[in-house]
Length: 434
Ligand code: URA
Image 1: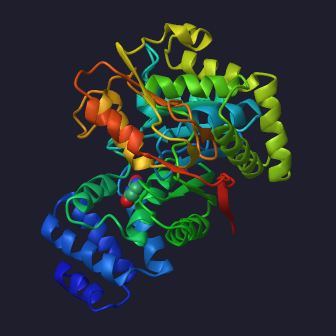
Image 2: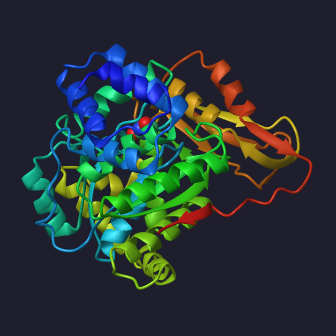
């Protein structure tokens, strides 16, 4: 088989055979197929697309390009949640402990933040001592003992995706539904969970700019999961504003703690309860989503979710006195208040702008080698639907950097005010399940 023929087949709009797809993934992973041929094929896929069958085969080939995690020795149904990348998205830190407190098993492999989106691992590491690399035996033991572990993915899992994603990033081939779907699903499937809930975002700063494209991506991923034997469901949520109020690593951990103590921001609590309800149904702990939602609410009210968060951090070496007393987290040297220069209802808070601003304050990485400042970030004081008066606080910026006047202006510019009353839409725009 020759790679050039495979490229030409896709260029001409033909369906690729299973053999062709597996030949490409194997050859690209072992280095026998060069980057220039892989980039020609990914560009042809971007223009010509892939049907359901091709996308499932591609996902399966990528999933098996390296190690797969065997979670069969974990008792019970293992559930996982994945977000396609949000700003202020600390959902895993709240929903993971809550569903585990209700009896589900959570064995999660998370990522680091890059660009305007944060990563769960960086957030967890803002608690001193927290380890995110543990052996697979200890990972499984921890899930069996306390019901939850959240760790970093090892290099040996899905090497095909690591190479392909880096290539796509610099060849203009990220925005292809079959390529995004196979990239996300191959990693999730290789991580071994029985059931997966996907939170697919749309809007400013999301991969998918429109609701329709987010639904198309989510549907593709749910179909792949189903075809490959995992209970996969998706929720479609918007990024018309950051999730919750806090954006930045320790600031978001504090907000997750407050949420588990019954003091979370309204939009975030709504998402956590609804996502948790679905995950409990997937874990067969609740008969319906609604029953699951009630169980999650109870785990917030009786603090069993917060207790589980502390167990999670303790098991992975984290100093839980920080969780018990959040005033122990270091605070940035400079705290700037951003105030409104007019009256109005908040119509939109540009998530991309807030995410990029938080990164410039020190909360994120422009490149994978940048070092994160855990205390830096932004706390919103107003959210979509709120009324704001001229001179009132819109947000606070936390940083250890100097000369950030331009960033403060960008944060103010992220707010769109309207003279008309604005009604906040429900968090979940659509739920997709087979
Ligand atoms: N996230 C991924 O993991 N892969 C993509 O292709 C896009 C988003």
